[in-house]
Amino acid sequence: MKKRSPHLSAIPSVDEILKSPDGQRWMEAYPRKRVLRATREVLEEKRNAILAGDTPDISAGAISAHVAGRIEVLSSYKLRPLINATGIVIHTNLGRAVLSEFALENIRKTAGSYSNLEYELSSGKRGKRYSHLTDILVELSGGEDAITVNNNAAAVLLCLNTFALGREVVVSRGELVEIGGSFRIPEVMKSGGALLREVGTTNKTRLEDYKNAISGNTGLLLKVHSSNYQVVGFVEEVSLGELTRLGKEYQIPVMADLGSGSMIDLSQFGITGEPTVQSALKTGADIVTFSGDKLLGGPQAGIVVGRKKLIGQLQNNPLLRALRMDKVTMAALEATLTQYLNDDAAVKDVPVLRMLTQPAEVIKRRAQRIASSLRKHISSCADITIIPDQSRAGGGSLPGTDLPTYAVSVRPWHISVNLLQERLRNGNPPVIARIREDALLIDARTVMDREVKSLGHCVISACIKEPVTEESRS
Ligand SMILES: *Cc1c(COP(=O)(O)O)cnc(C)c1O
Image (cartoon, rainbow, N blue to C red; front, side, top):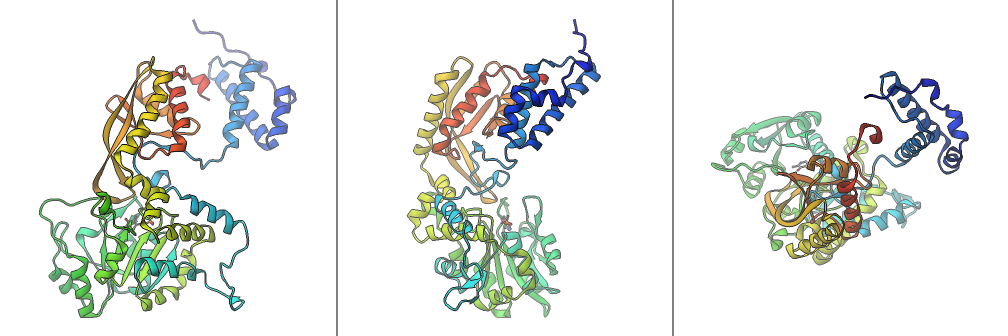
């Protein structure tokens, strides 16, 4: 039988709650604004529940617990760290690259002080912000010059606007890609004021197609790395080498948007299909653009390397001011790039590379540690096994490359696997994991060693927690 709804007048007032011992404590520990808001919100919800004919618990204890929980939620930052148990290393929705310790330390150092961001120490005159990363980028890539902007979309936009404003850019129909929903080559072309001249077909484009499209109004030949898909079957594309020879013949610059743009050859780790920045330049590309936070493993950034004359033109485009990189990013990027002076250091210290290249055995050991911490506590409410699986690079990198990995499979007995997934997502820290059939898979590739313990606690409490009721959820 349904209990009778309590009377509205039985709900305590905001004032009463704030004067209670709990209220006094909150007022000391948290900003007054947040305490007031949490209290008002909770009381409002109770009132609405009563008006809707429900029977909410309005005892002092229940209300106090609710308000405390709400203050906690309101007081935590909205952008929060979480545990990525998806195995997808460059997960755009989860923030792409985890920064290295060197990058973090350099951010702290440079952003916590004044810096020579636009100040030339040798002359005491105004300096250029774009100059700081030029040297290391030239050294690493073999290009003549370099410039960095906010992200790779901005880099592509800036290049199109600089080299092809009101002119045609020749692109294969097989390379008119969309990345992450909002970056589409035809649309970026429009925003940059360039005219798209598509050639070939989805699966086959030949050198003749490019050649026939060239006219007096051609500004650029563009090659876009098909980052997040593969065309299989009857496929023919023009290599960057062939395209650069054509460009030379007609004196039209050739640009390669590599998307991820690896700075080291990952084939030594069995990861193939991603051209390096160095090889694109060596092949003859005049301009190469790539992201800072994909395979490079740094902060969000767009990097352009290539011919001095062309980079100089980019520097003079007024649009650059709107796309410029800030000092926090610059500090992180310089530190990340510096790791690349030594391949071994990069693979060890840049988390993206470390996660991509770690041997399956290392991942398996981590999975075993996760599994054994779980078995100790929840062997009576879930099946825990370790299974071999495949993880993906993500972020539009290495399409079609599956990386052998190990996952901890958790099959809960008393709750559905969907509820387990939901609880983990809403835990503290949140844990993001995927479901396959009726098991939750925790891919150990992207779990960091320092997260293993906390991950264990999260899974244990999600598995054994009482079913969440409407009342306790809020
Ligand atoms: C990812 C990607 C971009 C966009 O780079 P952001 O750094 O995300 O702006 C552009 N082109 C290609 C080919 C990409 O893969």
